[in-house]
Image 1 (cartoon, rainbow, N blue to C red):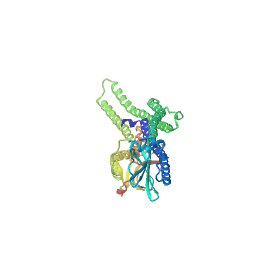
Image 2 (tube, protein in one colour; image 1 turned 30 degrees about the vertical axis):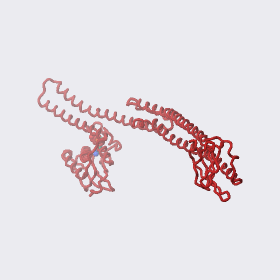
Image 3 (cartoon, rainbow, N blue to C red; image 1 turned 45 degrees about the vertical axis):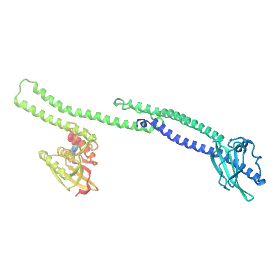
Image 4 (spheres, rainbow, N blue to C red; image 1 turned 135 degrees about the horizontal axis):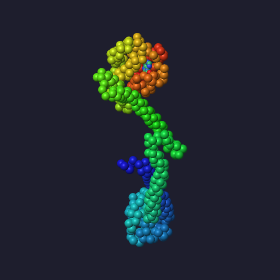
Length: 456
Ligand code: ADP
């Protein structure tokens, strides 16, 4: 329901419901309490009347009861009656009955006082007390009644009072709650306006916590933290784009310079055209690789990822060796692989990519006659893959996994290979570490959660 989507309406509904139930209960309680008090007073009065009549009877059995037959008892059909019966016969009755020749229903004798509410001979509501008394050998039953009309007048007016007072109270409180909640929510609306006003242009702005109510401060704090994270991510992205365009600029300018040289003269030899095109094609391939790497990284950053399966890490390492052997031969580097079969849960293609990037570096930055030793192992639920080379070593181990970082600025690499490898390993719930001795070589260690059931 649409109305329930508003805090204010929900608050009002809950309040209305709770307050109505509480006030309704209270009203019923008060009404029945008053009824008990009013009827109790009538009953008390009837009790003393019956006692009085009984005392008079005990004094003089032939009593006309004229002593009690005055006042309300003398007004016909007033609701104030008494009647004395003996063996089912009426032996005395109040003038209010005898004057109109009316009777109260003949009762069954009862020594216990019996109170009842009934309709009198004048169709009025009456309260009747019936009680029997032993006088000499005979059992007289006395009935005395009083009109309930006055009591009902009191009760009805009290009910009317409650029916006016409580709804008015509920209404008044509702208005107050609606106003107060509106006032409270205004701060929230103010906060949402401030939030709306923040875009990528003013991501650096922060909301002042002190300017908001205490209840809203955690929200403001959370929002500020989120802004900081967004700003950081935004800055990183900006940096990534600027690095990405920078890394593409170099091959583009190489291609352009080849074109300029070739076009600077009208006619050139076929070999010159061929050489230029070959170079352009080589640079274009490198550029394509960098574009692929950039796309790769942005895909790894986004959430869509990885068809997962059970991957044999040793088999992946074997594929990498097969793939890079020609390059290693060209560089005069030997690759050695050993270890055991360890399975991990992951994406085979991505793991192959990560490992290729690392081993490729180990060959690329190695010396002629050097080696790359790859080992697959497992320990404590982790698959462990080490790649140790005898290359030039790494100066800034703390930075090698940074995007676009290159140790040597003249190097033709993109500086993305290791960051892609790290991103892939991170996404598999693993980690990568590096140790290195400049001039002697580097060792990369990859830890990946192994699949226990198929480890072996
Ligand atoms: P690139 O694609 O340029 O090689 P990487 O991210 O793979 O970029 O590597 C970043 C830098 O780290 C490289 O420029 C290189 O200087 C250094 N590096 C990476 N691996 C090795 C290694 N095995 N030995 C020496 N230096 C390395």
